Length: 241
Image (cartoon, rainbow, N blue to C red; front, side):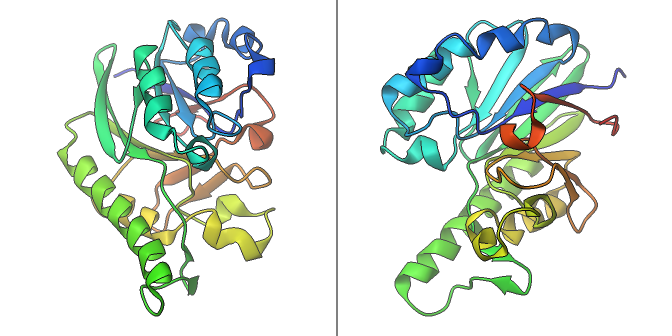
C-alpha cells in the first residue's frame, strides 16, 4: 500500500487584496501530495467576499481538498454561507463529521471540524459555576463526542483528524501560556485517543510549535502558516515528516 502524502496548511487569512496570489504557490501540488487539508482561519473577518476568494483559490485543484473553518471564519456569523461557497467549489467541508476519500487504492477517512478551547490537564476549565462557563466547556465536550462517534463510524484504511484548535499544549509552545485555554482542549485528544487515528492536524497557534503528540501516541502537527513558513507542509501516514 503506497504511503499517503497529506499536504496541509491553516491560518492563511485570505482577503480580497490577495485574490489569485495563493493559487500560484499550489502549482505542482499533485506531484507532492495526494490530498490538501485546510485547518481553518481561511478568511480574515469571515465575510462572504473573503469566503469567495478562498473558494476560488482552491477551486479545481488536481488533488482533493478538505477544509474546516476557524474562529475568524465565524466572526461575521456567515460560517454556513462560507462553507456553502467552499462546497460549491468542490471542497469537502467538515463540521464535526467525517468523509472517506479514495486516494488511489487507499481509503482515507478524515474527521473533524473547528474544535474549541478549554485548556489542558491540570489547568482547564470545568463544567462548574456560572452558566457561561458550563456552556463553554460543554460545547467542547459535545464536539469531542461527535468526533469520537465519526471516527468509529468511518470505514477506511487510515484516519486523519482535521481541526482548527489544538488537542495538546505541546504544539502551542511559543504562545503565552495564559491563552492556552483559548487555543485548544485536552478533550479533543481524549476523544481521538479513544477512537484512534493516524494523524491530527490543526492550526490557530501562530506562534506555536509544529510537532507534538497526544497522550495516546497519535502524532499532532500544527500547520498554521506562520509556523510552517511555507505554503503547506506535507505529512505521511508512516511518519515521513
